[in-house]
Image 1 (cartoon, rainbow, N blue to C red):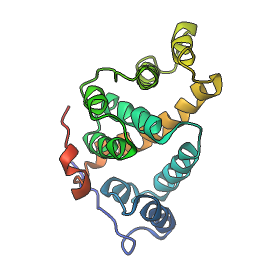
Image 2 (cartoon, rainbow, N blue to C red; image 1 turned 30 degrees about the horizontal axis):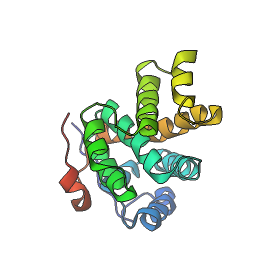
Image 3 (tube, rainbow, N blue to C red; image 1 turned 135 degrees about the vertical axis):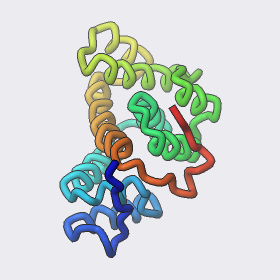
Image 4 (tube, rainbow, N blue to C red; image 1 turned 120 degrees about the horizontal axis):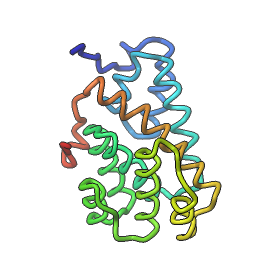
Length: 182
């Protein structure tokens, strides 16, 4: 299989450097996955724009990580599972809930469980949700607008998870403690 380069600011295509600089500022480093995504300025710029948009949305930090971790597990992207497990713990998601999501179970927190269940169903059903799916999600206090916001989170995940599955980047040191295998 083709080996993708883990780009630096110096080696990345010129049209990818601004996106990498933004990620470095936001995350504190250029994650190896993003560094491989930089091979395509179209992908990295689309990802960084969608990432910023999603992170400016209405979900709390822990809720965003529950959603993104659930998606990473559903898409079996080992790099993203390790990254989002690390970030979820940093955001204060209960360690048992992180383990549950990694094991394809629901978190014990009711809102986190509804969010995890809804985003997983969205993937499994390819967006063909029924009123029962939506009602289970909104029934714990999420708004109908957040039903659509979950799609924005899924879009961010698809870009990163699929790229991670193709480029297979080395797991960065800060995320090694959360190594995961499907």
